Length: 152
Image (cartoon, rainbow, N blue to C red; front, side):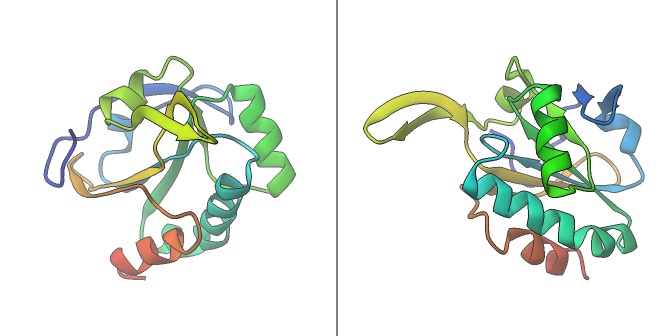
């Protein structure tokens, strides 16, 4: 289980912006790495739009926002275009990164059990260390709280 102070597991994932994003290539910047269950669903849309609206504040704080779900790059492109999202969405279709961060879990909805992403966020410092981890995140207001944690 990834905890505060742990080394953030490095990864390379395909981005909706084309090409790949590698976490270790972002050393020297703070990274807000947020995992969400599914593109274009109510809670995920609220959360993504909050991050979109907070992008200028995160940029001033020299922080990069990355959204990760098990959706495809094509799904991410549609979601991003529909809501004017301003940060990369990364495709973790094989759940490798979600597993590494301990967020790929058995979930339950309407009495049905299935595997999926537990909404979680990791603040990774400039050295690649998890400064803080939040699990079972509520979508509304999370971006604003992170902005305050970062000093915005």
